[in-house]
Image (cartoon, rainbow, N blue to C red):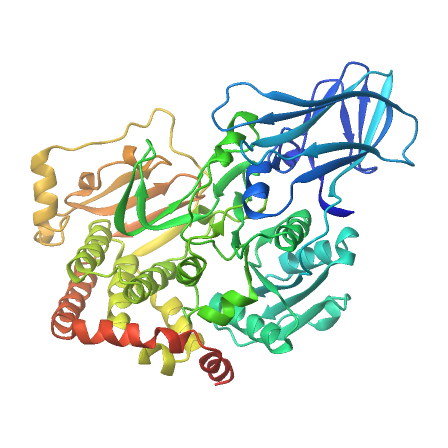
Amino acid sequence: MQVVSRLQLPKTSETADLYVKLDGNTQIDFDAGKIILHQGSTISFNTYFNSIYENYYTKYTTLNELQYRLKLEGAFEILVYREREKANTRELIYSEKIQHTDFLNYVDLALPLSAPDAGRIYLEIKCLSETGYFAEGVLVTQQEKQRDITLAIITCTFKKEIYVKKTVDLVTQDNLLQNKKFQFFVVDNGKTLNQSDFPSDRVTLLPNRNLGGSGGFAKGLLEALQSGLYTHYLFMDDDIELDSEVIYKLFPLYEYAKQDFAIAGGMLDLYRKCILHEAGALYNKYTDDEGNRENRDFNITSLKKNTDLSDPNNLNLFLVEDQADYGAFWFFAFSHEVVENIGLPLPFFIKIDDVEFGLRVKQYLNNAIVPFPSLAVWHEPFYAKNPIWDIYYTLRNVLIANTMHGYLEYWATLKTISGGMFYNLLLFNYNSAQMHVKAFEDYLKGPDFIKKNDSEALHNQISASVKNFKSQQVISSSEDVPKDYQITKVGKLQKLMTLITLNGHLLPPFMIRNESAFIHYPEEMTKRDSICKAFSKRKIIIKYSKLPALYHNELDNKAAFNILSTWIKSIIKSTFGWSRITKQWKQASKELASTTFWQNYLNS
């Protein structure tokens, strides 16, 4: 008998709806780890983490029968339901009344899987006795596994000791995982950890220079590869929270796999625990509200974004499997064969390394990147951490990735970079405008720029450069936009004058009023203020929804003209060297992903 997964109970009330639905006459004893029921009350596992996503198991594994094993005390009616993508009603597939007086033995019930018409299966338990208790549930199979799996879990960190220690402890102390073969490789880019911080012998600490996320993951992957012990690898970010069950579920998926596939774990919002940010993603594509998809350069589309997982009505959305282009490195699993055939991530420091790696994985596996439902971690949302230097790495690395994968077109690139730069100049946001130009400049230097430069020193330089402009300030503020605030739109003439004068940069000083324009960016970006309301004003104050800060930008003609001058020089340079530069990046792709390159790069 093999355990496939467990019916997990929540650790806190905040995440309860992701695990179990309780009626008003039940309660969770978090200390004892059990649910207390009273006569007539029901608990339902019609939830994100505890549903059985049958269609994924039948498609990707050889599993064709499963069995619930439950520890209960009392009298109960046990019901099992199946829901399908297109069905409006649920189908009862199992029903039994039982009397169980103790926790010493399991109650077993078989679940034959339905491959031709698979759906989503879940369990409900109704209490028939005066009081009842649910203590444990596991999903098992009598089928013999196809292969043994050894997993290298690789995480890299930079001074996020609390997150990493908590994650490692959760996984290494999980009782069910003790019978599985795995090793944690913690790559410490900040060199603030000691091996004594990890008492388990399942943890290998690897001090490393700060070569960013890509350097950290490559370091851990190289170490695991050199041991020759592992069939599969899992990349996990350091700033996550997880339930150790997501690690356990990986093992049977690969032990019973019909084919080789990668797994893209979902990202849940750390601050809104029941909201899904992403379940895999599309690259250079856009999907509208109607589900229509089109190619769009430099665009990333998060799949199933902002789905409320506390609502059971949303769970059948996962029965429609999206063909993801990549999976982010907060949780991405893949096989040893993948690495042997495509190599390691590229030396991007941070940003887009997971995108580019995923595109190679997808090509090798013929689209088999699986956003498996219920495999997800909580991650700090991107709206809460958006340093300006992110713009530099995102744009530079997108240009490189697009070149290597055949997406990059010269005029589309100029349009995108120019548009971003000019937009930020209109907002007097010179730091961000400068990052657009710098990213393009460094791309034009070709692959030798990455090979021969110290990425740690470059990062220090980039981080320092975003503080160049004294005309920009970020002021902490918990104040929200007033309820009676009205989104401002302007007329065509003011829009035209804004563009012609670069929002006042080309006006004589006496025409600039010493006033401030307040611009609000709500969650729905289609309803934002017009930036043209700042025309002929000296300052712009920006408020982004969810961010506890106000951004004060002041007009600075000299800064704007310096940025424009540098941009014009870059355009001239690119016009004469574009073909040569793009060819160099393409030719360097295999070298930059090789173990030989990384061994030298990490030790240089």
